Image (cartoon, rainbow, N blue to C red; front, side, top):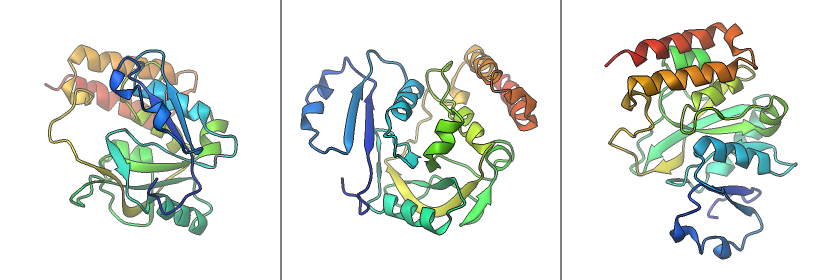
Length: 234
């Protein structure tokens, strides 16, 4: 609501339907740009993001994801709007996720440059950290790109890898998403899972990628191999 750019819509998906502290939330929404949905049960972040993608308006042109423990800097949408107008041939913009102190959690080698998600983010690790992603809506809709339906939590790379097959990342150094930050590794982190949980996630994602023929992509196979190897590292 504090954004300097005002032409937006917000799709909120409540994935904690049994949490009574959210009960009065829907009645407090009095802005026509905000649409509120409640899952029938806890289904995980991937299901919730996919539902949000299904609920966006037909005239939506760009999509940004925001978790409930983060918030946008007031000029975030205005920054993306200006990037879109300036670089009309780009379909995927990335800016920083940062702590309140102003320290970015996102690391890219150079500002205002193009990057390959598969090579420079997943494999070579030249680009690191959580980021703010602004992706052209029709790129997602026409190519039917969704978050994993086989894995309940996390594994966002599966979604962004598919985007990366169609577009490169245009990185701009701006602290767009603000977070308190986490000093403790969360349970969703791959390294925090048991070996069996790691291997199960890898298998599920490989199988999910088969109808999309991701196994024909060398970078997909390389990353899967790297994940299998990592699963056996204590």
